[in-house]
Image 1 (tube, helix red, strand yellow):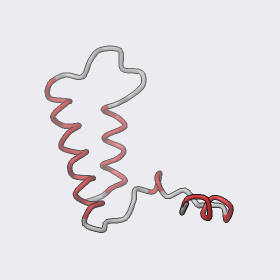
Image 2: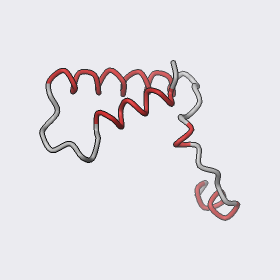
Image 3: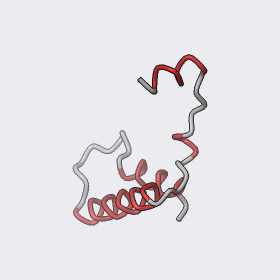
Image 4: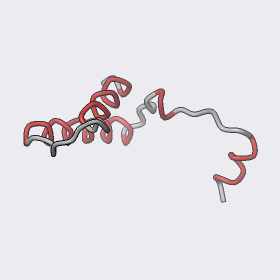
Length: 65
């Protein structure tokens, strides 16, 4: 499982430039990718790079509260 590719595909399906509602097949594809990413993360997989933002020391202490 490549979480980076899966996130890319999710974002493509949810493209901001889309004017029409998602087609039924696209909704199914979106759900498949979301479920796959959820399974990956739930089993200890690493986050997609886009979600791996470095934390500043002051953010780390407030995030634990």
